[in-house]
Length: 428
Ligand SMILES: [Zn+2]
Image (tube, rainbow, N blue to C red; front, side):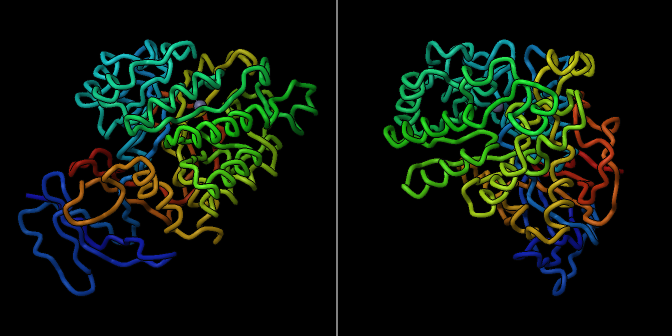
């Protein structure tokens, strides 16, 4: 007994859709038939009528914070994966800045066990580059790889020492693993929460300069060239970083990059005031940086879209902008935001958006996922492109309500998510 998804509108190319019926048996896609030519016998199967809806591979998010272990008041693997499912995601890669951090085999196992027993989508953990993310001593890359991490990162902080980063890259390259970098030079950012720009000037605040990010990108692409590692840049937010990555790619350096929806949609000029739901790291930059990130995504300099889902409690975010932690939630608004603002407005094709959130992340990280094909894992999202709804954080499955997008009227809401052949979330 399987699941027939009938009348699925699947992206063919550009904005063109084809209508297909998809049979899921067990955890795989068993059959795909052209709806114009064949009506399947659905007897004995569960039927999901997707008429009028878009059906895509389950979305893939390579940069998320699940907060467990250690910060369960912000999010747990149970709530975080449900939030992901509600956003159409079936594979998420979690950052190791938990407490304890994911720098030992035991912690990797803890996360994988929790994900298997309490999670509803696939969780791929990253391991730390340095012990405790302190930048002083490398973790045991071999042991972490063996335990199941998919790459190394000290996300949350930049690796300050060039020698440490070079050693990390050389080691990762020798075992065929990627290094994923949060790019930030601490000496340039101390005490600031907004970027240098209109908002910081207007309010007389110290601003975070673009170089704080780009200096690490520039340093690291040179180190990647020297070591031959696959180097992946986290949450690109500045014009300078885009330029450096574009240049590195032209030189054949093995560099890939990601960008978040908020850095494509918001600039520092949009920040309404001293509101911690607009405080994230990297910060919102200038309109010129936003434009550069969009152009970088369009020309392939930036490979993929991630959310940097970073839940915090309401109490923490209410402490005022100076004391509140950095970060906003992302799973449950990412697709509707990007669909509404870029695809529905005719700037991007639907194919472009879907690939940046499915097949391309899979390709960048060598995962056998992200496509709708017979024999492949049945990870599927069903999305309503027409119904308009306001962003209401009270409806989130995440424990986090920290978003700057409250009240935005959007289309493109996921309505049902299948992971490994099972319905893990449904609107109804
Ligand atoms: Zn980061």
